[in-house]
Amino acid sequence: MGKENKTIGLLYNGGRVDLDLKEPSVGPDVVDLKNFSAQTGLYTFDPSYSSTASCESYITYVDGTAGVLSYRGYPIEQLAQESTYLEVSYLLYHGELPTRDQLDVFRLKVKQNMLLEESVIKLFDTFPENAHPMSMLITSVASLSSIYHHDINVREPEDREAFFFQVLGKVPILAATILNHINKKTVGSYDEKLNYSANILNLFFGGIPNFEVNPVFSKALDVLLILHADHEQNCSTSSVRLAGSSGTNPYAAMAAGIAALWGPLHGGANEAVVRMFNEIKSKDRISHFIEKAKDKNDPFRLMGFGHRVYKNYDPRAAFIRATCHEVLDELGQDNNPMLELALALEEIALHDQYFIDRNLYPNVDFYSGIIYQALGLPKEMFTVMFALARVVGWATHWCEMMANPGLRIGRPRQLYLGPKKRNYIPLDQR
Ligand code: SDX
Image (cartoon, rainbow, N blue to C red):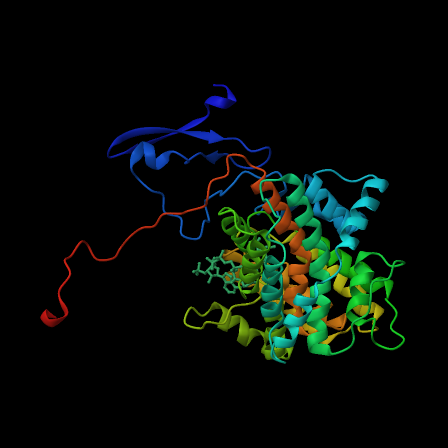
């Protein structure tokens, strides 16, 4: 049989249906269920989408069994080692690595958008002192839809591209404004002489007298941004796609993604991991917490461990752990207690049958907070840093989806278990 005839036969009480198999460029075949209900009158049930491909995409590939991650075919290890976040952003968006001139133009377009409208800045005066940075990020990104809505036609490539560069330029400034709301007056300004990640550190801390960007720290931040840039159809990217599929304002769709990322089961895990380390405190208490994590009656979970897709070591976690050592060595903290605790916890968990049986390994969030803390960020900012990196993934997926002429609004069905038909009973008869 030729490739186009690959099918899978399904017998059911109404008969037999032959379903086409769609063949990916890499990875397992996908059963095409687009017309399944029309053909069978049946629905499929997959409540957390563990077995469901929601779209066709050309951007990122994850092989959870092998522990492989690639952006447009380039292995994450090579990109983290050789590339920069801005170059990876170009690659994710355009699909190819840029020439030097193309990268310069891309960098300029991002920089031209690194500014905030007065109405967005004023919003920060309304936030309470102790507002969580992620609540401020959701609100401020959503507020951009109050400025950019008249002239955005989501079906026009030029408008999508304008949005792409706007959001890439504005989110770092929003992150610095959010940090300023917490730290008060450490914010610096954009410096032409600095690269993208060094500028982010300068925006964050440039207001501190005699502050100088440490190149080891800006390189570490750039690696973190590359590693967090995209990850196929994770919870937040899927939220952007589902919201965006209705044709809503792209900033509103981004806000949906940021909202999903905030959850401790997703991007919020990097903050939860450091809170967990602070709760465990010392190595001699690790076993007690490992037992808690294994206890079904205990809500405690080992934050930064486990993954829906990776049933192997998350390739990003290995890189972040190595970067951790580099940053802490630079600070003269090569025996940093939190890193020591993390390494000991990983060692114990990876040899515990419970974790082995369930293929639970450190994920991208396990070590990242140790670096962000070493860079001088409060733990409440850690997920903002995740969003700062992931915004290029969200925007690229949104653009890919909106460019699809066959796009239909996302609208799952359900397995209804509620009451069968019954008649209304007037109030005085109840
Ligand atoms: C991210 O999807 C992505 O790509 C996400 C992400 C990205 O780049 O976008 O990679 C970023 O979100 C990483 C994940 C960050 N979250 C955490 O670190 C939170 C802690 N991890 C877990 O809550 C959990 O592992 C999830 C949420 C990450 C995955 O959950 P699943 O796929 O629904 O797995 P599950 O809950 O069905 O777990 C399977 C088994 C269960 O035990 P049994 O019922 O089979 O006995 O493993 C157990 C779980 O109880 N388990 C854990 C555990 N994670 C899973 N037990 C203890 N501690 C954990 N962390």
